[in-house]
Image (cartoon, rainbow over all chains, first blue to last red; front, top):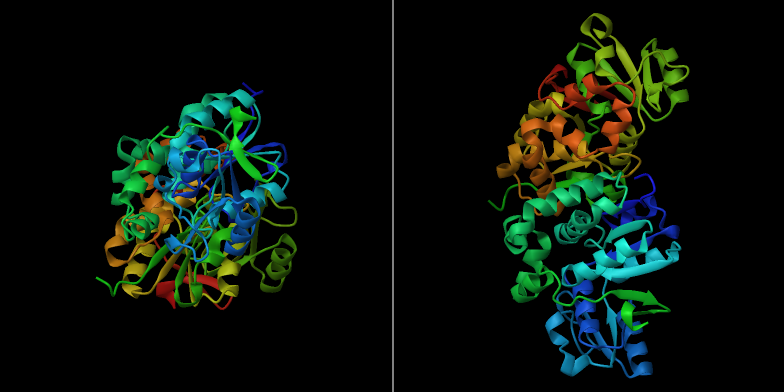
Length: 245
Length: 245
């Protein structure tokens, strides 16, 4: 029992420094919609997703690699890019064997923070790849930090709900001495019978922001388990499917 | 409806900068045990509580003012101080008309951050003065930031539960567009029938740290509403009872 690895939940990038990522697997969680879309793009056969932190870098790299450029700002495709953040923009017929350069704000920021802090293993997670994430974490037997991308450093419900879903599934394999994780699981247990309804009822800021752009379909997909059940692993600047290594 | 003031919950001092405190009432929340003890000391007739951030400063000021010096480090009365953080150390027969200089880590740090960031009104809250806090916030009709002191910047359950209790009571008077607040209320609603049992079950790090020192009685008191129902207001370096101004 005492040999189980630790598991912590970081509720915001502004709290990541409180956790020692140097021996840990860090799970980047940006449910609406970056890490849901990353899982989907890879599930549909893209060779890799390259996360970058700015629109100019996205344009530059997209040109160099003849890659698909994707990213939104304020809910619209960013000027100079070709596609947005919706998972439904990336069917197999479009992305198979292609590279996607994706710029997001919260998720990419957290991913680079984890790398800069020395995380040896970084993966991305959201409900569409819940089982793949859980299986990987149990299999690896290493310390885990569930990193919520949040919204401009502010706590959000959906990333916390995903952390809670992971904890609920795999907690017996870990030593969890972390109030954030306890809270996340409690929240998930309260919400799990209808995550979409929970988000709507709780007046989640993200929910209202996104539904303002008519994106209910995206939200329902992003909260649904295992619709794109692959494991995106960060290797040399790219997210690739673990099994494809 | 649109004229209601805003209410936000800051889950950690490391997140306080995300909120504009300059027009707000900031509620400092450090349930185990600083703000529970502050309410108790004032309820029992102390003239004021002076929160300071270090043991040397506590000793210095205690000597200058012939005040009671109080504070713990690692669960024990700090060397050089006379009393600890337990509310039960401060009965009326001991503290009436006296000044208490109290050093705590998390609560005092957050209080000074709020002041340095320009908060015009700072009060302290915990379950023992839940109703006094709620009544004041409703009466003032100003924006509110519920500031959880947390534990070395890490989220904790007990401060969040108190934020949730406040929100649950006064939410109809405020415009709440804040996922932290929604989560806090959800957590409180799940826990409210037996807060002590909830804390114990959830394996709260604070609970285990404190009960390790045999402080179950303190915890039960700190989670019980309205045992010391006064409003500590910060005025010129001191926390004093609002009605006594």
